[in-house]
Structure formats: C-alpha cells, structure tokens
Length: 310
Ligand code: GFB
Image 1 (cartoon, protein in one colour):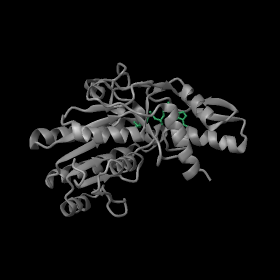
Image 2 (cartoon, rainbow, N blue to C red):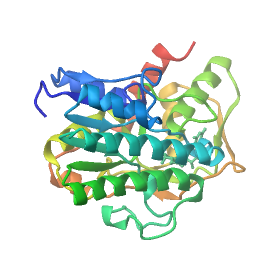
Image 3 (cartoon, rainbow, N blue to C red):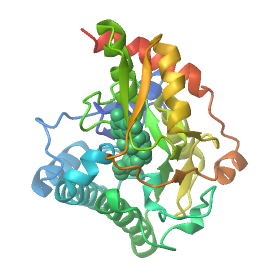
Image 4 (cartoon, rainbow, N blue to C red):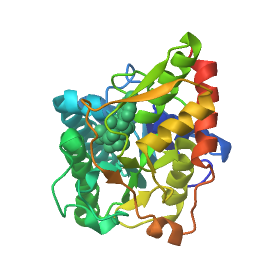
C-alpha cells in the first residue's frame, strides 16, 4: 500500500476495524474510507455494489462481522451464520467486480477443530468437528476463507485470510450477556469494586485455556500482512502464549483492584478446552506483538474507566 492508496476499512467502528483505522492513520496512510451501518448496510448486495462502483477502493480490510462471546454465539446461531455470510460475500464479490488490488479477510481461531492438537497450525483447518457453541460462526468464517481462495484460484485476485486469536481492547463490547471474556471480567470486577460486592461470578469451570491479543497488535499485524503477504493460505495472528480463565480472572481482579472472592458458575458453558495458535508462519515473516497481556489489560481498563464506566 502507498500512503495515498485508497483504503476501505469495512467495520471501522468495531473493535478490529477501529484499531486498523487508528494504526493506518498513525502510519501516515491518508486516503482511508469507512461507512457506518446507517450509511451502508453490508448485508444488502445492491448497496454494497453501488458503494464499490462509486468509491473504487484499491485495498480493503474486511473487518465487518457479527461477533460475540460464547453465550451470544450459542443463543443467536442463525444471526451469526446469516449476517457473516451475507456481509463477507457481498464485500468480496464487489471487490472482485471493481478490481480491488488486495483484500484482507479477518477469520477467527474458532475455525479450527474443537479437539485440535495445540498449538494449532494453519494446516489443521477442516481436519475435525468444530466446537458446537460457535459452529455456525466458524462455518461462516470458513466460507469466507474458501471464498477468498476460490476467487484467487479462478480469477487471479490477491485476497488474503488472517486468523486472529481471541482479541480485546478499546471499543470492545462490554455487555455482560453478549461480550467476550476480557471485557466481561473488566466490567464485573470494576462494578463489584465500586459496589463493594463480596464476590464476582465467572462462567464455567475456569479451566479452559485461551490466547489473547490486544487489538492494537492485531491491527499492526494486519497492515504488516497487507504489505508483505500474498499467499492464499491462511495465516494465524497471535502471541503464542495462553492462560487459563482462572488465571485470567486473577490478573483482571488484580489490575482492577478488587479484593473480594471469585466464584464459578458451572452451569455456563466452557466452550473449547484450549485455543492456542501456532504463530510460526507469522514470526517467520518477522512480526511479533508488542503488548504483554498485563499491559494490554491495564490499557483496556483505563480506556473502560474513561469511556464506558459511569
Ligand atoms: O470469550 P469467550 O466468550 O469466548 O469465553 P470463546 C472464553 C471463556 O471464558 C469460556 C469463560 O470458557 C467462558 O465460559 N468466561 C468466564 C466468560 N466468565 C465469562 C464471562 O463473564 N463472559 C464470557 N463471555 N466468558 C468465542 C466464540 O469463544 O470466541 C466466538 O464463541 C469467537 O465464535 C471468539 O471465536 C473469539 O473463546 O469461548
């Protein structure tokens, strides 16, 4: 990408898209476009077609998606599969029709089988059954990967697919029913501290292990790959380390400064037992994350206090 290339960030107000937008600006890219959902409904094929014909972006970061934590995925499977397939298919097809130079599609680490050998290498895609709590979302993301690869094979396009690990950071969703675990824990511990509640409830057993990446690192990796990666093969983006949910809870508790107890609600699902990406391919290209989990959660808690907490 040149600094004056026309770049469209789809989903520029979400967790990932807003981080990519910030990072692009920080690096001096000056011709970036975005559209709110009100301005452009990406589920509508005709609107997407008109937008691409009129705007003719050269590069596209496809970060628009319907996302949510374990409970949201489990409760609204139809919305997750429908919305993601519509949005990604509309954007990828219009990108092809209007000759977009390069597109980056954001997948997810939940595309890998539930009982995948750890750490998960890119070639383990489609080697076993998926985790049931997010299967519809994962199937949509796998369809996105296959769409990019098929267009590359048949039409000679340059569409790359990146698989981020679990993400967190500013502009995350802090709703306790639909969010991912880190924003949920930040909010739960913060509110318990303010209200002097005796305990905080964590979902599941605390034993599942997850790998987390701050979204500023993810954005940096996406821009790096847009500039340095031209393969159809998917590529993982992670930090290469994981923690148990119980360890994560203690870390967030400490950062927030809550002194009460932690209890586990084992009626809530654990989801996949472990999700750690093999990041050898990305490291081989020379990219590494900058923020540790502790620094990243500290920054996110500060952002939460400034922007969300009342
Ligand atoms: O972040 P999370 O919802 O996503 O949950 P997944 C991770 C783990 O944290 C699960 C536990 O074992 C949860 O049971 N957990 C503990 C909590 N307390 C809480 C809480 O208060 N809220 C939440 N949300 N979790 C999602 C997928 O799976 O990960 C998506 O459903 C997507 O498809 C995303 O792939 C990255 O890692 O289990």
